[in-house]
Image 1 (tube, rainbow, N blue to C red):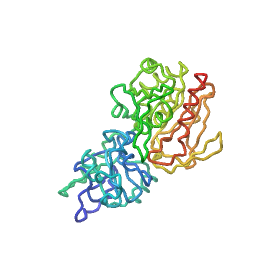
Image 2: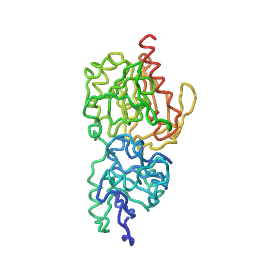
Image 3: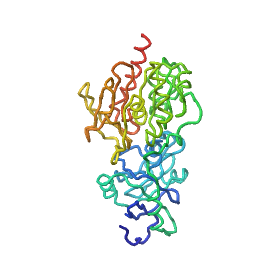
Image 4: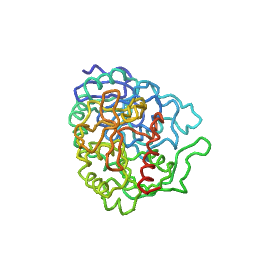
Length: 386
């Protein structure tokens, strides 16, 4: 429970059960309420903070030194960050990296992102791991005036992520062409000028690097909103359909996404889903999903491919999971987490359809799973008879 505010405290993270973590404010001043989760990645904080899948969440970083390489204009996954706040152990330092254009604190302020530093992130992480992801209120008050009782009430009143459709908050509003390919030190982001296949990517909160990986694999990428119908998608005459990552409860988003996906499956178009797209594809096939105790978020998650026996270290960010026993007989589980045995992938035995729960674009994270984009392209080429 709470203790008196320490001298110099300008921020507090207050959980719904009354637990209080005092600290120093970073980024914008204000108050935000969301689910509190933790991410174990040691790098890539800018990609994490701009990942649309973090809508409705305050991110606690387990790695203590966040901000030391600054920020730049390249390492963003969307224009407007969807995360609601961040929690740090150590104060943000001056940036030290040749690519940095400004410090993290200034960058946070420019986007209105609220943060706190100087708290015991190990204690917070253990609390989430043991008791589940809590709702919390995060305040940055430069004048030090913090009403803990009011914050406890705000945290307790927040409805939580179950039943919440957040894809509508982060999806693009219009259909758009995507040509940007992957980054290189020598030339920055390349452009796909000679695509071999047309892919429609359904944007439930797509990260830019996922679209870049599709372009790098030889695809002309047409991005459509989360609310696109099967007719909208198939009207582009795609060679393949990609179902993107995204935030929130898949059962809520599935109210409109599942009928569209079922229409694509009926048409026999090769389909690849990741993260939320993986969950929505499972629902469209007749499976079920459930909320996890505290989710998977980090760049060090071992996943076993049951068909090859190989283990990949993966990048993950999800709080819901597919229940493998709910999948129909023609759907085979292909990947499992070596942390907790949960489902990490499946394929349809009699159709060109597969999905994984993790992020093969690996931004941030290891590149063990990049081959899945080529697997998707191979599936498209086989369908086309190449």
